Image (cartoon, rainbow, N blue to C red; front, side, top):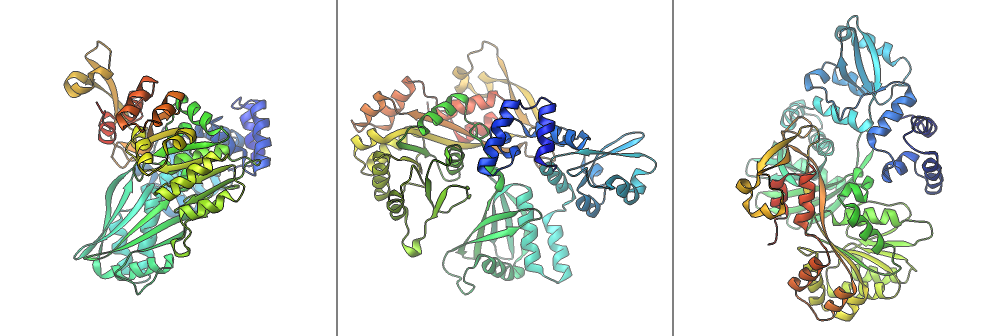
Length: 550
């Protein structure tokens, strides 16, 4: 990518960013040592497409939007893989007299003339026109060159060289490319099944003959600094994996099964760091409630939901907003998933008895303004957290509960005194993750609500028999699933005077839910329904994840 000065000039001259916003951006980027692009994207002053267009203008070439127009696998494959990856080029478009080749570095000297020589058979007498595409879109286009994992496994095994390390590398590279959150190595009688969890759903990626698994397992243990001679108890470790252009952190869990040791690797993706409250799925109303609670000098904000529902990501997005030089923010987590510059992060360590409770006691003596507790699991941690919130700290934490209304009785059942909870709790947020419809193959469908979803008629007050909903047809970009990426749906209970008074009476979940509804709160399903109507997710996905409670 070109430098900040050229991008700044292109954004200003193209009218993409005002002079006032650019001045604020430059001031903040100098103060916090981040690029102007990071700030502009994070604060939604520009989109990635605007960034692409402006960067292309800085390079004085056209912008090739690989998100809107995706060349076919056949078209991309016309440029040999080794040339494409060496020069970072994709065949974008073929015309009668010219060929448009896009790259993320069109300023490379003599690139067009070099490609003309290397691609003589493909280009023939046509003129080469260079265009610019975002680096992440170029990387995604390169997926087209990858053969099925099992095909690559066969080639590696036949080579009889570094079988275990090469197989592991291919698996991890694929997981990163397909944005998998977890990799499963599942030993069976004669084979080991490799599965990826992508957008919350497990998909089989390939199979390895069992005879090679011991070496693969030992290689993973060595990289994770785990014991090679331990086969009958669980072990946890971590790997720093070096990809082509960045480091990726992997969390490793090994558990003994009847047919051998199962490995699950959590991929801690860097792109999560770029999430904003809006991109997570928070409506404007909910963003205002969230930010209002977070700007109070003390109190508790609780985010609830099952494992894997994105609770920690939501709190990280909030911490990034609150992370100012004049604030002391300290976290205690298990594990620390993403490092945030300027935030003091503590890792729970059972071997040294550094538990959530002990860590929280220590943090309270470190003069914090804001405390993030990875999870409230027991009464001891809950008591210390409430006391911290009561004594002038803003405390953020996650908690396991089915919805926002259930969280309050569960905290009371833990033994927290009702008057303490009523005094400290500012906001309870419940969330789930639903899969996004793939933007590349999204299409509208007419649905007869009475016929297809008779129990949902009251949510569609229109007199028309049919409504327009959306789905993904399935394409190369989404691996024919119709979905790509995930978005959160939310339920908020803001702590009003009436809600605080109700907590003093040790209320039931239904009493809390009834009062929150009277005060205008909407359920997980209703928030999700807005995303269904806005073409973000499908009705099937919503009903599977958060069906209506009535």
